[in-house]
Length: 225
Length: 302
Image (cartoon, rainbow over all chains, first blue to last red; front, side, top):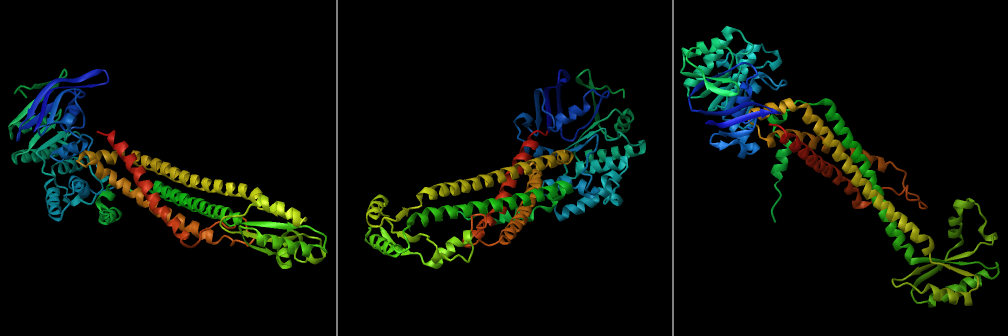
């Protein structure tokens, strides 16, 4: 699905990531951890084509991003759901429209999809907030809305960048629950987080691998977590 | 021949209401674009009227006046009739002269009226007699006619108008050119204004565009929301401007018989349809300008 081969990424002078190789297999569940500033967000951006690697190859669904046109990247993103760190919405549209945005822009905004939309909003517990504007939502509600938007296209891969960044433990648990359920439905999941408790909580429910970015490299973390 | 696909145009005008909602409405830019388009279209109507009117004038001067000339007979009062008759005889025999006619006292008075007032006793004044000469298609030999007149009608002076006609025709042609250049500049300015407005809107909505890109929107989808908005705004504004411009031209005082070219500014007959080209043309300019601006901006985003 997503494949990185000897990837390096540098900003300006310094190299942030180097010699990273990884294959995300279908149905796998990964945590990505590491100190802040280590390059977790950069790593995820490489995975959905928002950044081009300075060296090596990134392949999305067997296509090298370097050879993909802008429209190809757009089409690939419809198969990759992203929960952004600073969840970004269109603030002038209600939550329901924001969650349905991927459907709208891909022209799949049909009537039976609105039924799905209502079910999805109920699933993330935002049914009552469907008509609210994004700025009116609490932190947890925004994170859940972002997750709903990431999964509405039924993507093959879900990349979540600090999805529990600014919400309380109970809410983190619920969000994790949603991601685990999605994984059981066959989705590939990758969660960047520095919340080790979250990783421990997940370990009991799902076969998760923990990746760690340290000194510019990606390592498989031990089972001691 | 391939039939133009009007359904596409119709779809563009009706638009994808969903796509349109993606970009938040912008009050001030919208109104300014509308206003600029209206002002530019208003000016374009006048530039067009100027071009058309001066074109008409140049044609008239180049055509009608080229085929007419004037013979002036200055002679003592008792000889003037005889000399006039002699001159008319000479003109009748000259090859290339279609007709020659002595102006009546009333016509002469009408010609002098703007300078001396209506109550001029023309009969009592030693004013010269004028003869209007109309050439046929081939024209006559002015030099030969002058020689013959000097022999037979000593008081006759032939004026074939070239002396003052040519500069006027030149001036009119130059004015017409100026009109077309103005129209070009007006459309160029309109393109610049719309590009600036579209760039401002694209910059103001960078966040919206980033979100749309993130969820898998294609560039064409994002561009369409902006392009459609600015094209329709320009079309509306230009239509408004053209209507106002036409009303203003209709309200101009109508041309006098002795009218200069200023009062002759306007359209005639089918010429009134000419300004109707301005709104679609403006919309086309807006479409291209916004399209290029959007393509340029989007290319720089991840």
